[in-house]
Length: 363
Image 1 (tube, rainbow, N blue to C red):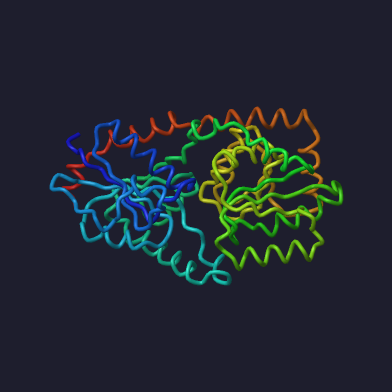
Image 2: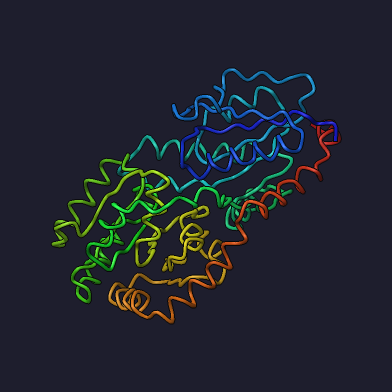
């Protein structure tokens, strides 16, 4: 294959972000395959400023025949790339339905609408469309994308070999059981349902707590959740908004909690699900969107939000050690599918099977 330049483009690059981690790993794989491959983004966190170039600095070289674009939101990057009329490999990380944000963040809602419009506009110049879950691949196919496949989010084992933060572990385990959810605090994640579940579960376990790890940028929603917890009488640290945490602290939360619970109603993939599985934390999750395909036959899924029944299920999963051991064993086996060597092999096969020259001639 003559192609030697294959650059990646995305809206933003941030430490600890699942899409950003995915982009960085793909760059490493491309370098190992002999490609010159830069990362270009509109927004760059200061911590990644030396690894990511500003998108406006990109100018295609004469020999370039293709590029890689990661799509997850309405983006000026997608519009800029249209000017170059290069075929692209699309990596689709899903776009949250905009109606989830109409009340709390109208600007983001409009950006999500734009993202869905762009997804249709990019179809004709996309030579390979990769969803990071089967759910995302099916969405691409429903929009008329023809050459599709699944390239899962990667679980890089090196990021989970941190020693426990002993101080944090002591704080987490000071009062138990501890329910954990990881993900930005956002309406589609339904943190209000987790708070409601905690209210019911504390009838069985008065000391039970809920820890929410993830970005608190949606301030209106965060404030509303805090008021909800207060109105339910959940005081004295019953609900903790931990915000964005270091990788070491994230691993500590996973290893110190008693159960991972997700009430999310829209997931394009759900990386915290596989992190929980890998680190030995049993998972109880609402069976929505990409969750079933990510979990496979691991963990425990539910289809209705009956809080009294769910509180009983939580109690069983927390205290029944035989059940926990069975769940953890199956989850760890499932997590192997997402380890870096396995996903890397998929990516390499996709790239080696591309026929850039013949595709370029058809553009």
